[in-house]
Length: 234
View 1 (cartoon, one colour):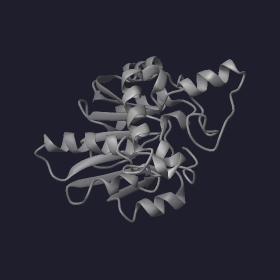
View 2 (view 1 turned 90 degrees about the vertical axis):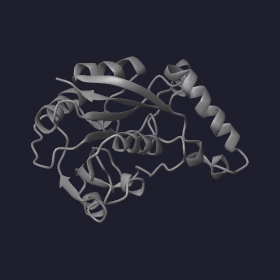
View 3 (view 1 turned 180 degrees about the horizontal axis):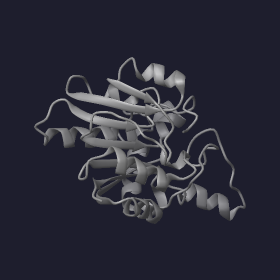
């Protein structure tokens, strides 16, 4: 899994964390079951709890880093210390939804790992939400035109990324793993993490809003991340 010491909570209204949480609330609202069980694969320190309060949501996390496991256990109901691989075998309450946020790109073999996870741990029909960075973003394309492909500590070219996805290959990953896609959302470049003036209510907030709008129109070119939602249907 990723070096999540560099993995930060993204709380602005256009971020993947916010959009995934909104999707989870949507799914929970149409379910009569409480608590609504969420399996958060690669949960880091447990960001989703800030959006999903107990007792409405029962959060199960899977995380490799022992220090982050300890943090996640302070707020999550259940946390398993394990690496996500084709050999993963755990025992936990069957979830009502599975979240794989910013994790598959850090795995050497994401497709076999995802296939195995769903086959051995998930009931058919379970909603599945995946977020992946867009390697075909305009910023990366322009860099390639200039002969640049420089890794960084975070972002699309995070040095811990082992796999890269375009819109087409992200969708194909889901198809190959028997996930029937239902919806696709995107996020813009997280400008509020670049400078606080892009945050809501600040001087450059309209620029961030425009960026989000353009990313929704030109997904393959301007989306920073893809958020793919579907259901596991083997």
